[in-house]
Image 1 (tube, rainbow, N blue to C red):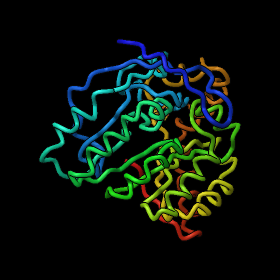
Image 2: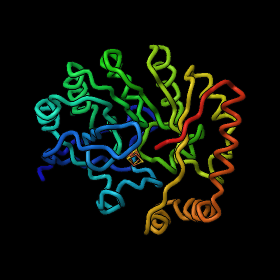
Image 3: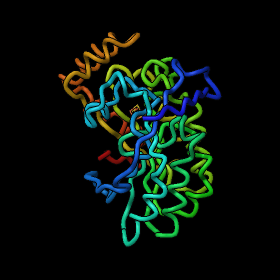
Image 4: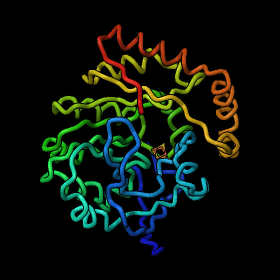
Length: 278
Ligand code: SF4
């Protein structure tokens, strides 16, 4: 692994807790088949993620140690490999099915952008999902693509977001990005996930109102998914013990179902459609 030693700052909301460490990894398969409903292929330009969300289950799925999740490996050769392997393929590509395609490294490396440029001539649809307003940089490309653009919003509270998603842009930037994507006429949606009982409820009315004001017409709800060892890892993080205890209790008692129904009702009252995530 060669270290590119990129040190980046978030433009707003202060610097991330630690400068991201970036390495490179080579690509064998650019478009593995996706097992997620509605997606034919998965495209993930990065391994690991600097957003560092407390609830992230991707390290446990990819078997990358949780402590190394924020050491991001960039698939710098992905656009070239994709250009060869995309020939003859049809369907929908899920962009960011495992890690965020618009984390800070992308601002400098442009791997996601170069992949989108390779996809356009082949006519496949792209379903993109991120927590970052950096996606706005690529609006020119999404205008030429079929598919949808999603931004994850878990809360409108800056404090809660900082605790849960310490390396990700704050909620206001995500909401503004949704507004711009919707203004562009793109098929934009908010992923509310994971649903965090005892946490999301705090500002549920503000969350629904803020999302409805962006102009998007639909939202996707995703439940919290635990993995063995996850609560222990979460509790060992700064400020993570209380959150881990709350989520573990909610997970045990399946409290998220009540939260899901409440959100559905509130969105429907505002004429917005709700669908289940994956
Ligand atoms: S943005 Fe997604 S992949 Fe990145 S840390 Fe958060 S949950 Fe994990």
